[in-house]
Length: 355
Image (cartoon, rainbow, N blue to C red; front, side, top):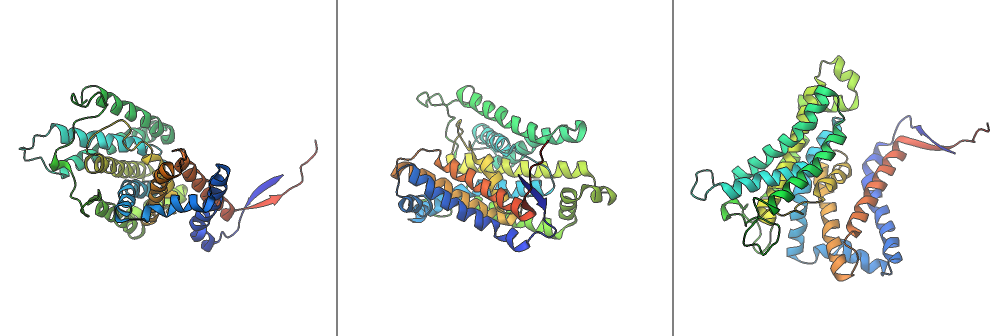
């Protein structure tokens, strides 16, 4: 029988290198997976991980995919460091898209409020409102925020589906469940001509850097770290656990809503049922890959964005199932958590006792 025993002094070097080890193990497991699917492993890995960098448009698409992941991953990194488990970023992302869509669809072009900031603010506020539900239930009734935030994700998806098939449906959309295209004023400026890369990339970098500084240089960051790592010490220090729960959930929910607003207004240009379907759950992997550091979430977002684009290319060029990208992301999270477990615990063989 194998028993895990806590290590007296976990290696800081291995903790730093574990994301790279997890990526390497994922590549090895991916090669075996491609071989099992009847593909040349080296060609398949090249298509999956290198084809997203073949031309300028594909490189820009990687950054487009990384923007919402970086925003959500940075917020979730702060949340998880505070030991607040927001698993509903996908729902907050969806509510952000709905809020931005409402602003873009129903504010007249001649209105003084017809400016890009309004849909983005509306999206962030809707994401915060959706995250406030698990925050209130945890602090007032002691309800587990994992279950509440996760279940609200499906409520948000059904709400979006009802809107695009019902009251907000485009009457000239040939039966497709989608809204009218958003007006030009609601689109973020494009950074690279001929691509979809928009100024949201600057927002993602600014959010990650700002949160990184907050966690390392401010009293609020200290409170969140102490509350997450040593709750009893936080109580002795007089830190408000309820206040930290509210702050972490509203922050992560607002960033998820902002990500949804950017995706709806500046990448897709309208609302449709499948908008950002998996981005919220992928952002959880981004946060862990970034070692629960908002700045590290930038690198994690790039890795997962390459995986998403590579999965689409593999589907087209190699005729592989569309779920291969999800398998890769699952393997990456598995190896990352396994590395963390072995860093903090030592496996030991023990004899099984006879009754």
